[in-house]
Length: 292
Image (cartoon, rainbow, N blue to C red; front, side, top):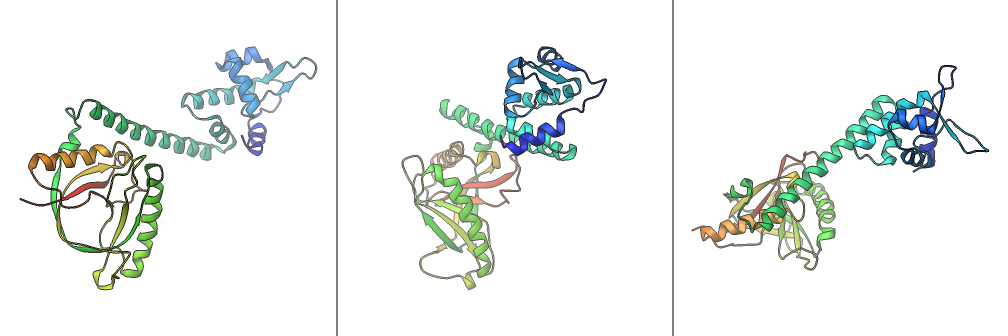
């Protein structure tokens, strides 16, 4: 833990001595705070909750009765599985700021749980052989998409680097589109090959712009009008490997319907990904196909 944070925690939360604020042995303090001796020693070592007095000769620790409020708060925060470094920051903050830190921490927990829930669903579908596919992936829809001209950036990338590269590239291209009349449609990502631990695509990020001010040659892509089959994903579902279930669902639907795939699969991002919550719709997984 940062020593400055630990010092601030110690100064802010150690109770001021008073005639009515008795010193308690570590055993008595532990019982009243409903914390173990092991936990108290850990909190002391990390600077989260330090004794008011340590006898230099015997090493006996004494806590002020007024520190029980802090100890009980620490215990409650730990029941949220909050890391001790975050606990220290909550203790060091003012009331409103501390409440904001707890809220931010729990928002992160809920986002992680949402992603893990989707991953568990993906694994359940995979292990059942797809016979128990979630209803969302049964709702494959089709649409006609007009032609467009897009700025592009292509790269060979493996799974561990994919999310970071997509995020930075799409952000950069959305800004660069301003030099060509601004975006004229959602950003989309084309997978020209498999992307996993061993295969690196390539992957192409596309930013549609005004055809009248578009360029030509390398770095530009002219997409013809096409038909797409697609499923819609929530933010929590746009995570590898569970997103693969969406690709599988569309490919299986096209095969069942006898509609040949006409081009590489893609992800279409139509919402502000950063601002979206885990349950918000943000992306379509789509396959161009040849209509009957």
